[in-house]
Amino acid sequence: MSIKPLFTAHATATGGRNGHTQASDGSVSADLSVPKEMGGPGKPGTTTPEHLFAAGYAACFGSALDFVAKQHKKDASGATVTCDVTIGTRPAGGFGLAVKMHVNDPNLLTEDLDGFVKEAHEKICPYSHATRGNVPVDFEVVGKRP
Image (cartoon, rainbow, N blue to C red; front, side, top):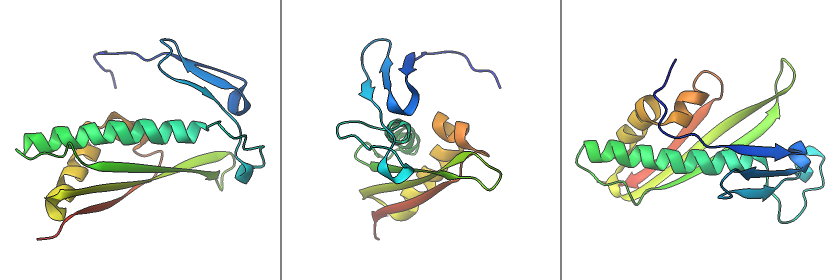
């Protein structure tokens, strides 16, 4: 697949999961450590690649969701998207990720919100495109009841 570039983010990590990562423009700067659950020190004030991925995916998906809603003459700009990224071992060896997205918007009917979530996931969000076929992504959608 080829894309027409619109923006490129640049970031560098030194020291892997026990190091530091920073965007070239200084907008993101984070010390990293392996969480205790994975046998690491879990140092206070540090983060993990999974936290960074979850934050990026949640933000990107929220924008994709609002884009889709606006195409349907609705407003999802107030939706809350929480992204859980889990890392674990794979049966074939190595590690893999799994994602659970929690989407909540009390101003939209659940049925409408669910449709917008599916469309954003299938057609718009680049994180969803990148994970498709590689990372399981499950959704929990909560909107307004009729």
